[in-house]
Length: 449
Image 1 (cartoon, rainbow, N blue to C red):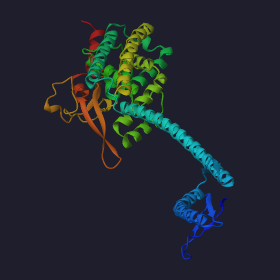
Image 2: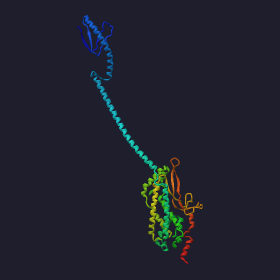
Image 3: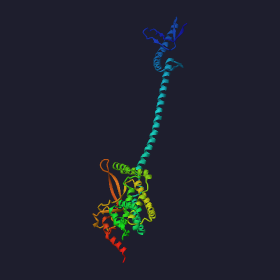
Image 4: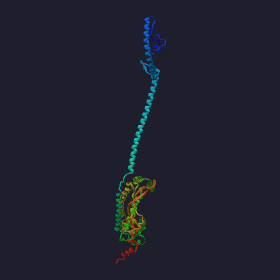
């Protein structure tokens, strides 16, 4: 009778009848080993058992090789076998590594989210900045390419209206003189009026210049001992009054870039800007500066009234109606000043494509029919080369700054309308109050036949 025993550890199984046969080792498997005790039957059974054992051992050998490969994989990464942990320490270590790795991923993810949020915020800021800069650029382009509020033809028409109004005003003032009371010897020699007449003479001489003053004054020298005489023609007085209006208007407008109530320093700044910047830039600076200082503008109508009254009084107008005459003149002058301010606003604050300037001719300048007009003569070729007595009507010119060399800009001048001038030769057709004809007229009036 045989028995069997179970072995979980390695066991050596002898081969049947062959000592040189290799032994079979079984690992990690339950192997049943049969050992014969005695007898042939048992031996046969033992032989048969050995064959079966050999077969099982061969199978176990191949299985062992496969198991070793599995074990190697199991050693690389802990796993479970038959529902049990192979290595608790390795599992704990690997779990700790996984947790550390997860924390690293979470921290990296948090950092990336912060970077993404920061990038989004920066993108929003850049987008807003881009919109702001785009808006500013559009405003700057609109600013630099701003169209003139008044076309050149409108400004030219207003200049012609100014000239026409000056002629009408001068005619109106001549009528006041012609129809008003004249000085007499008693009034002229009143002691309390001597200072007044001296001041009138000084103002009129500065406003008219020596030639026109001499042809109009009837209160100085020998003329002070006779009554003033109304001249046969009042053209010279008309010219004198027009020249006063031109001089006064020129003071209001000033030079290009002149600002209301400002000193000459700002005009110098504008000239520097004109010489170093594009026309659109300098003109916009001028327009902005003018609009910002327009409230500093003050009326100078009183000075114009004073000059006109002084001329009328030296011509022999009586002072008895001084207040009434002054009120009539002041009323017309204030209306005319409003026209001048409107034109000034258009030229200084509404024109940016160029600079528009009123043009006059200086007294004593040589007459040039290409750039001047003489409305009191036929403008014959004989007028060429004669001297200018005064300006009685404004011209208009356009000045545009053009780049010359580098960043230097030079003015390009275009005459849109020539000024109206009176030549010195006009005086040859008239007599001065000191001439003999005036004395003869006085004699004839004193001794009527």
